[in-house]
Image (cartoon, rainbow, N blue to C red; front, side, top):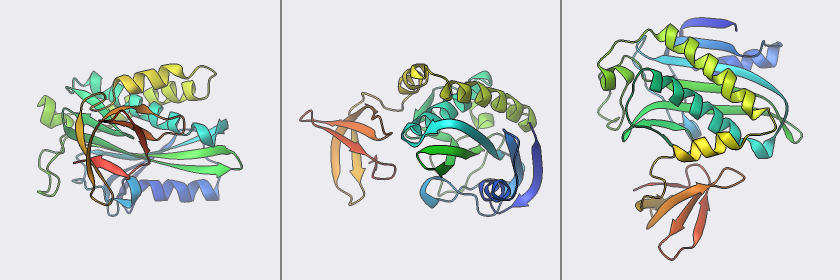
Length: 243
């Protein structure tokens, strides 16, 4: 495992993607940054972090024969790996908010951004961006539903130690992605899914509100919500949110 440590950078994901375009990278090459000027989350959202308080990193992984239609397995594997490490640090009430936000109770503790490089019908490689709130205690007022390891456990955490544990977990769960039997990934992920089978209010992109309950994930990675009339609707990322 090769680790490239940077002080300040626009985005670890952008940096690592550019590296991968210019040279052959060792599997599980990691780029970390003390701070990011333009950290990115899902669908272009900004990721805000206090310098040197959190884990901001990106991980390069290459694949031999992972089909594009199986990309949901990457969400499962990465989410489970992060959650397993947070469990080691005794972070309480951990769940995965679809597709891959890690929650402690109802507060976000980790954001994940997975960016794939496609080749015909396969995923050639991926860059996994991870923002884990570790030792930060104070957050901007605009971020009301967030927390950190230190907030929940009252303990200071060694960020480098946390990263090493996380890479080992990623190696294990991503190995399952490349194996023949991946059912354990899906069953584990679904058992951790935030508000699964709990009636909730949802909002679509046009602000339409509706009641339903999350029942699962489709074979192509869409969120499945069962409505009051038992009709099941499927949604892509950002097409629906909790109201």
